Amino acid sequence: MIKTVLITGCSTGLGHTTAKKFANEGWNVVATMRKPDQSLAEEIPERIFVTALDITNPASIEAAISAGIARFGKIDAVVNNAGVSVISVFETTPMNAIRGVFETNVFGTMNVIQAITPYFRGQGGGTIVNITSNIGFTSFPLFSVYAASKHAVEGLSESLAYELESQNISLKLVEPGSMLTTSFGSNTMSASQDASVPESYKPYFDHMMQCMMTFPFGNADVNQVAGQIYAAANDKSDRLRFLAGPDAEETARLRWTTSEETYMTTLRELLGQTAWKNSQGK
Image (tube, rainbow, N blue to C red):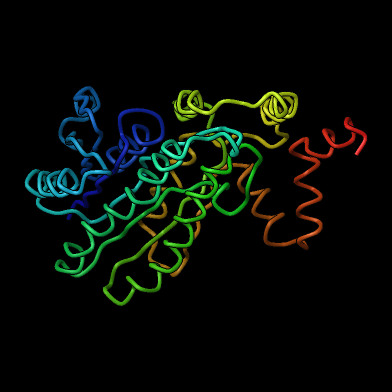
């Protein structure tokens, strides 16, 4: 039988590309977004159904799940893709902005998982794919809030991978590197406007932003990431993590195959932290 996937955050970027990837592979797709745009469904109308879903609103999630089941008869997998970020100096990042990131990235993901789990258990199984980031297992300067939220989802996911297995539900993590071809970067910059940069941080902030624009590893291609999400949704093994992109693969290698001292020293050099310290005579 044809399988069905529900994907959050499909209006643009990775979610939009992933919806088309699953549809082109023969899956039915419940493509969800806060403000439904039917142009996505018009591309592959027999396979893609667009409906509203706000992951911070449990009633909205339940309604989207019900609408997807009504349209295609069942749901076999859920992809938690919707997310937000912020680039900021933590000291001056407003708590309401921090809570907003956690409300979407952490509690929104939890909302979807809690909503779909009873349904999956009732039908005898299903797959949940959580999209995090290489910043979910490493951390970069000026991304403290985003990193904290993604580390939370990583911990949640690893725990649930064991817990949900008892209910015949599979949980997978996809960890992309930077994807400059998506709208995520512009959304990040927009969200960052709420956080001021103190004068004492300004030279450091400007230096680190420039260094991150020239990070030596290649960016993840959005189609490659969509391919990894598709692979994760189809995987029947006990594998938890699916890396996507050269920078994710290299940071994973440094994080998990070298000593802590080597990892920290290398990241300081790659991120421009060492150059900054040297420029300050430290």
